[in-house]
Image 1 (cartoon, rainbow, N blue to C red):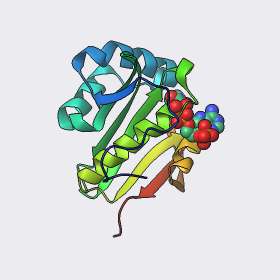
Image 2: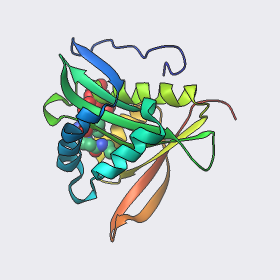
Image 3: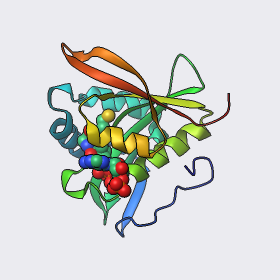
Image 4: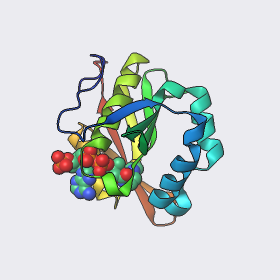
Amino acid sequence: MRAGGGEPAAAGLPAGLTVRPFRLGDLPEIMRLEKEAFGRHAFDAATFLYYATVERQGFLVCELEGEFCGYVVARRSDLRRTLGEIPSIAISPALRRQGIGRLLLEWALAHLVGRGVEVVRLQVAVENTAAIALYESAGFSRRRRLEDYYGRDEDAVEMEKQLAER
Ligand SMILES: CC(C)(COP(=O)(O)OP(=O)(O)OC[C@H]1O[C@@H](n2cnc3c(N)ncnc32)[C@H](O)[C@@H]1OP(=O)(O)O)[C@@H](O)C(=O)NCCC(=O)NCCS
């Protein structure tokens, strides 16, 4: 992870890819992708606006040739200043498996390092093998299983990555 050492590397990615902080005009595309990816568990617009208000530099949008192709939300915990969270990440379905998710995740982690975060935690549905593989490939490990986290019989795995020595 190149967190803290400038912009994350972009080797092997599609050309014309850019990452920037969220703008209000992104909201419709984010909501479309969020609903497609998470169905009834999708965040609503108010939640995204909240994240944009509290930590806009951690709410990143990716564009390919100027077209929206994904987003990530990263923030420092309100309760513990050395703890970071990644509440959501999604890439447009047609552009998955090209390294864009990993790139956005690296940018999110770099942002958290800049905020003084030492450990990042996130929750992911146990059956979401793509996301779990992404997080493991980025150095996250499974911390514990959270039963009924998303609803009855809908468990999550909590994953964790250490960004700095404690
Ligand atoms: C999870 C998600 C963000 C991954 O984005 P992506 O751009 O496709 O991921 P990348 O191409 O950067 O993949 C990086 C690594 O993650 C793993 N990975 C990603 N998708 C995978 C899949 N479908 N199956 C297995 N491994 C996968 C691989 O290790 C991959 O590296 P490799 O391609 O060199 O093998 C994307 O599938 C998505 O938007 N899913 C719906 C939303 C979601 O579930 N978000 C996570 C909520 S916790």
